[in-house]
Length: 215
Image 1 (cartoon, rainbow, N blue to C red):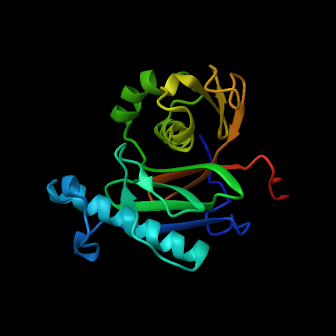
Image 2: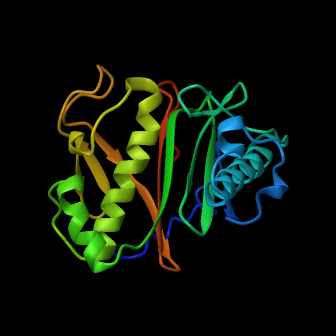
Image 3: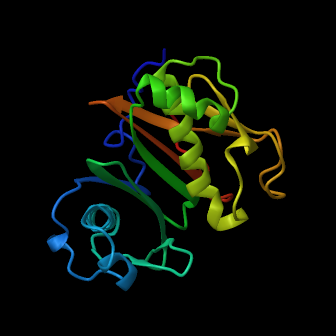
């Protein structure tokens, strides 16, 4: 069974990252919705709006300025120049991670409701081998792989969950080459937070010319 990581988003602050969390609720707070989202079901609109509101709040924390985050043709968020980021939601909350592009090369975040026993059993073939198969550990592994995908997809394109192996307590090791920068065997540290029936994970990769902060 995994434990709770003490490095919560509020404590991980080296000046180049910002986080924000919003509840999924009334999408009226964000009137400018893309056409395909405006025509979607109310739940989808609410999730999209909460994600964009979280992104706007995270941007304000990082840069002092807020902006509406659009959606590109590949459905990825369109971040203002000089920033990168990631958005995720479950049924109750949306979360955003925004990073300074001068300091960070890639960033991904994911939030999941802790799976029940049945869902956890069904997800094992998707996430691949894991040492512990309790629902919380499997949810953490699934979320970590989602965060990795969101961080690397803008750089390498699509790859499956089998491209990385989950190692406890929370890291990922590539099992195949994704690019010259990320060959098989490359290990990614995954930050995580567990509480209130949910799992939050994130990955932030420093730019090559920026040393990670000391811990």
